[in-house]
Structures are given as C-alpha cells and as structure tokens.
Image 1 (spheres, rainbow, N blue to C red):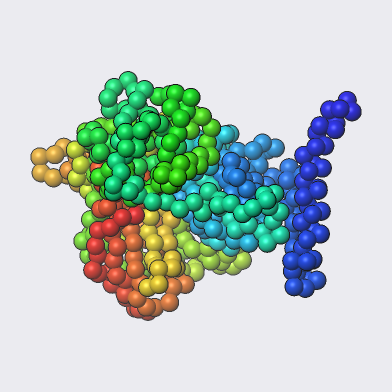
Image 2 (image 1 turned 180 degrees about the vertical axis):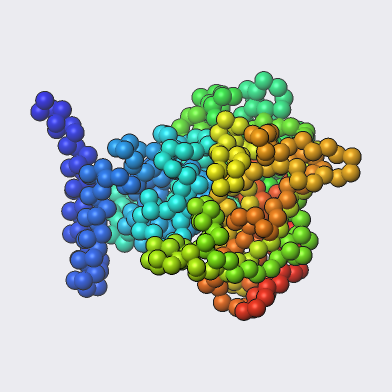
Length: 508
C-alpha cells in the first residue's frame, strides 16, 4: 500500500516542485512586488487545477517543450482531445492565457504534434476572445464530434520568461526550424507504396536517387495530398491520411518532414520542408505517423458566386425577439448575449445585420458530399431538418490593415441542389432525411432571409472594410482546386447603407 501511494504521489510532487521553482523565480523576473503577487496567483491557479483534476483543466501533449503541443481538456475526470474544426488564433490565445504563458506564437491543426491519443471532448469550438478558460467557449457538447485522430488542435505559446531550459546550449525548436523548397538542382522523386491499387498508399520520397523513405505526417492535409496526386498523374486527392494502414516507419523510415504546400504546386519539391540537405527530420508522431494519400480522377470543385453577394448585400436592423433560434447557434456578436443576460427587455432590442445571399456552384466532375456520415447528421429543431456539415462557410470582415473586426458564425449546414443547369436533374434535398450534397453543375443557395446568413455589425464603425465569404474553408472535403472557394470584396459601410463591390475569387 505504501509503495502504491508513493507512486501516486510522484506526479503531484513533481508539479509542486515546478510550482515552487516558478514562484521563487517570479519575484526576480517581475519589476514589482504586485507583479510577482499576480504571477504567483496565476501559477497557483494553473497548477491547482491540474493537481485537483478540476473540470475544464487543459494541458499540452506531444510537444518538445511545456509550451507547445496538442491540447487535451479534462471532463468527468478523463482527458480528451480537441478537434480542429473552426480552430484559429482566437481559441489559441485563450489556451495560452489559461496555461499562464505570455501569448500565442501560432495555432496548429491536422494533428501537428501527432494524432489524438484519446477521445475528442470538444468540436466546433468558437470563442469570442474574452473568455478566461476554454470551457467557457461555445462548442457542440462534451463528446459530440465527427473527428478523426488526425484532426487534433494544438498551439505553440511563447515560453515563460522564467522557463527553465534543461539544455547546455541553445537549440532550434521545431517551430523555429526553417523551411525551404527542394533546391532546383536537386530532384525529389515520389512514389506510393503499400496500397491496394496504384492510386493509394504511403508517400515515399527519394532525393537525387538516394534512399527511399516515408514522409512525416505532421500537419499532413489535402493540400499536400493534392500535390502528390498531381505530380504522379493520378488526378486529385480524395483522402489525406496520417496512418500506418499502408505500412509504418518500420517499413520506411521518415526522410522528409515539415511539408507545407499551398495546394497548387506541380511537384512536392516546390512545397516547403525542413532542410533535407542537412538531414533534418523532426516528427512529433510515433511510428504510425506516416503520410498517405488516396487519389481519384473525379473530384468536386466548388466556386463561390460573388455576383450574387454583390447584388443581394443589404442592412437590416432586426429585433432580437426574431433571432432566438439564431442565437442558439451563436450567430450574433458576444454583446448580444450580455444584453440577453442583463436586460429583462432584451427581446425588444435590435441588432444591425449585414445580410446577403451566398451560392456555391459545383463545377467539378464529381458530386460534393458532406464530410460526416449520414448517421452523424444533427437534427435542428429550429430549422426542422438535418445538418450534414458543421463548417461549410465562414463570413469575415477585416479592416484595411487585415485585422478581423467582425465575423459571422453558422454552426452547421444542410447541403442540397437548390438550382441546376438546364437538363440536370436535382439529386439532393434536405427534406425528409434525404441524401445531402451538391450535384455536378448544380448550386446550393443560401438566401439572405435564412437564419445566420449575415454578419452582426452592430458594433462596427462606419468605414471601408474587406468582406470575405469562404466555402469549405478548412479544406475538410476534397476538391480539385481551393483557389476559387472564397469571394473577397470591398465593403463600404455608412450609418444608412452598405455596399459590397469589386468582388474577386480567392482562397479561404
């Protein structure tokens, strides 16, 4: 019994030791006793939550340092991962703040620090930025998700000033490792191995005819997979996998890491990688963490109809009484929820909305189908139909300096053939639990009078802005090309009207 108890006390003693060291250095590192007191209070709160296994505690796993890794959150006494759907800097800043680090260096997606080790507790996390802890943000519900292990969300925070570096000499951290294209004088050969057909398998590369090896799957996505399929003449990527299904690193040792593609490159050598000439291979995953692809000659290709946006954009001052269903889906700014909480007459208050119609046209040679299986679709009582995609479109407003100043949030979507070219029959419908998707040469149209088809601009000052509306913004569903998935427009906003003009197609 004593030995067992000592083993259980080990982690607690370690955390307490770290806490004491941090608190001892806090006085030296801060300019005043008040700063030191606040720093100690923050550290006590941080480590107490971990020691007591409090609901909502978070930690970082898989990184090389304490301030980086995939995020895990504690619920019902068990740790679980967070899915990268809608994951961006707003959530990343809250993670770093909750853990007591000075700030966010960058956020990561696609299991950058390896695939999720445990179940997913959170999906479609949406933070306004004012929350003190991640559990205060909006999300689907504990354990409700449609995520694969390769969709783990992570962060790289700035290290604390008092961080203890147990290394005799400074070394480059993984996030600091420079990335380069393969030198033009070199040749990077690519092949697929271990698949059931020539169109699939783990990705192997050889530099200048040298030893063949696998590619580390850190951050491996459809963008990189599309380049592989294009280079091999196998069409388009239908799946980008982080798996040992086609063989693990015992079969093929990694020789390339840090691969980062824009998606329109003709060869993998044109993408950015860790310096292969120096033999640098940095891979956070285990031996199962191998990049793989499945290629197909047929693929959808969604195109944003920006003319529809220009022609339908307008302002509406809408009473909150008529927005209760939309508020359940977090489709208004955070101030509206404060009004709902504090003002007993909130129903008679109004919000100013920039409304517009958005249409997505499938110009590919295959139907666009939802990311979720039909059994995972969610019934929405407000809309009286099933939603098959959680993040199909995003609506953002930026100032002329590129800072996001307002955003629309649509929790989920129903995909159907709203209109088709002459002679093309409609195949998909949201009604009666029908199949959902967008057929070839058909459009899915979201009219401006639908809930959440807007951006809440109540707190936006009149001026000139950039409106960006993107479809399939997280590249969850394979497409031929992502460079036409967004409409980027000039927005002129006055106290009496709004005009959207000069729209161009771009990338999400």
